[in-house]
Amino acid sequence: EDGGLDYRFSKDELLDNIMVYWCTNTITTSMRIYAEFFGNKNREFAVDEYPTPVPTWSIQAKNEFLGMTKSKLKYPNLLGVTLLNDGGHFLAFELPKEFVENVFLGMQAIMDYRNQRTEL
Image (tube, rainbow, N blue to C red; front, side, top):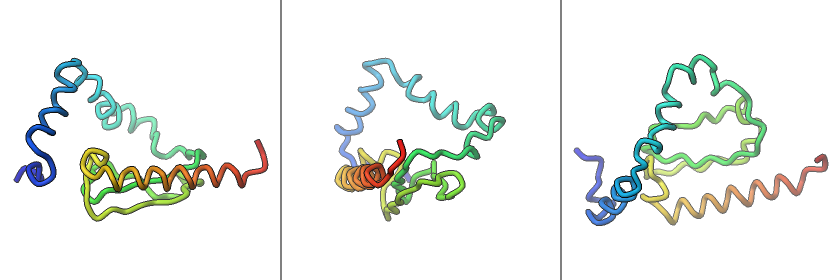
């Protein structure tokens, strides 16, 4: 099984996406984040264990392989989580409408959070 590529994308859309990397010679740099995330240094430094006080909103697609923890210890200002019953790693490409709606939900929550704060 191919993960449903023909179900969601036309061959032209897939080729367009591939050509962006091919023509700009940027596949190596686009893969760097994965190498760093899954590398030994990331695990040694236990980056995922450090709290992140920045207001955060999470969109989690059903088939995303890089899941985000919902821990309040990691994200004390986790303002919301959207759980989708579809989608995967390339959510903006797969479900653009749902992605955009949730980006706006998250941004509104972050702006509301900012407006409620009294300290600088």
